[in-house]
Image (cartoon, rainbow, N blue to C red; front, side, top):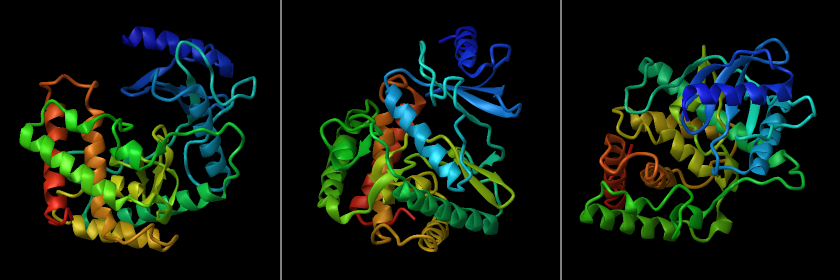
Length: 321
């Protein structure tokens, strides 16, 4: 979609919030198209035009109900702003939602060193562990209304015949040996996740990567709940470490993350499982790029190579951190 067309859709959507005169500023044009606008309260807000075919209108409304609950319970997350009709979303060419703008700088950027001194990195990952634990505690306390729907990231959705984020073993950048390695890791991980009844399972953020964690001083804010799902709580911790396992201080960051989580909520399993869930995330990302980038693209090769290396080290029990 061209930028001009996206702006026109944004202007049409803003009418649902009584903001027809607002001039939206394009911020991001990726999975969702995101604009900065001045919201109904006169303060900055983020308008999202949701990607068609990913989440249904009811799933997006459920996301908004969830984050509305989290914010009301005291968690610093984007607060949904209701339309003039009192709804949490606006239906149009694209489903639209409007949330309060969150300030801060991203925790980091994938593929680049963390932009913080080592001691601050430890403090931040300890804080991220605490934030994820609070998210899980509050989510467990939320009375889910009728019709609440979010994807389910269970064993089948991560490792079955049709994974939620794509058949990662079909990434075109993988060679024959790479495919075999991912299939072996897939089988091993699937056996580890059974039985599911023994796992801490519930609502998770599912995408707490560096760019979705904003830092302001020593305070952290989780943003972008678009991938939020019912899933393994350890998956949230694996995602948080998925961009760090090649860092020189990865072990210290993992320890800080787990210690922070355990200070607010019991760990969702043996700490050694973190290795498995980091690997799970690299496999999911290897499938996610399929259909989003060309077969010969740098991204396809990068995510494929990361998944192969993570799977190799996992199967050899060579720690990722």
